[in-house]
Image 1 (cartoon, rainbow, N blue to C red):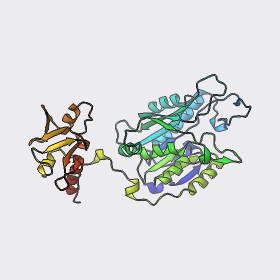
Image 2: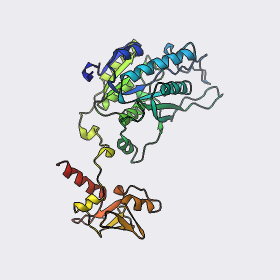
Image 3: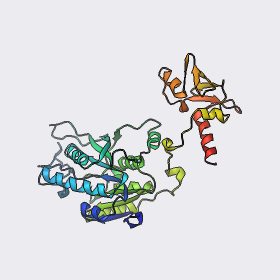
Image 4: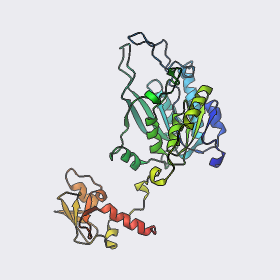
Amino acid sequence: MSDQTLPLDQIIQGDCVEVLNSLPERSVDLIFADPPYNLQLRQELWRPNMTRVEAVNDDWDRFESFAAYDAFTRAWLTACRRVLKDTGTLWVIGTYHNIYRVGAILMDLGYWILNEVVWIKTNPMPNFRGTRFTNAHETLIWAQKHRGAKYTFNYQAMKAFNDGKQMRSDWVLPICSGAERLRVDGRKAHSTQKPEALLYRVILSSSSPGDVVLDPFFGTGTTGAVARKLHRRWIGIERDPEYVRLARQRIDAVRPARFSEEVFVFEDKRRRPRIPFSALLEHGLIRPGQTLYFGPQGEITATVLANGQIRHGEISGSIHQVASAIPGAPCNGWEHWYALDPETGERIVIDRLRDIIRRERAGG
């Protein structure tokens, strides 16, 4: 079934399981699910100044028992698995009230967990009674449909997003507040509205422009708003007509930047053609006997050998092996060995020389 049969960029009002089962199989690239947490609050919460806390006490978060909640969880996760492409992934967020039950059912249904991500809240709601630790985080499970299948992970984009450092599984972000928090007559429109910053990381990391992102518990449309900003297609499923109305208004107000590959598409270096260091010698970009420098200003050097290895002192081996033998140094030689540019005399990282060969082979 083609993507044209999907209700793209639309909110479908109705029960999530019924709607999911009406969609084509294997048609969605990414699912983000923020299901009811089943908090089961038994009484109202009050601050020390005797103002009532706007806690989660909505009817949609109430279940008769754990068994009822488990049956609901199994139903929507099964329906999600049906519409998810074999290369697709699913994110689900929760708290200690539900995430362990959701995770167990998810695994029972055949999903394979890729990561557990902890959203650490910089401004969590205090524990007003002083009877427990303040709940300052929520947990996200990132899972693929089939263990071992290919899936989208924009590693380099997330590394760049994190100031050049590998992004970790602890995300320190504030809760949704201020102008971003939707309100109706001064009250929160939705008790569990998620910050756009959280969805930005989810969608940027695990989808590509044009991919279909589905949210079965759409609420006030955070997933759709962020998906639109990042030029993803989206589908929202929401039962409450008031949430549907608010979400439509919110998403209609989003004006994404004009699409260009330069802005929104990021190359995955792992998918580029592999070029061995010896190819630099074959193409005359590096010469036997030439000196390589470790780092743009470093004093450590190595000599290029005719067999495609390099020598540093008594150590010979690949550019990676010699780099890893240097105390405290990383092992990716492509990013840390430099050669002198014959025209300018400046040091250039040898990874740039490898790109010259790639362009030649691509006919560019």
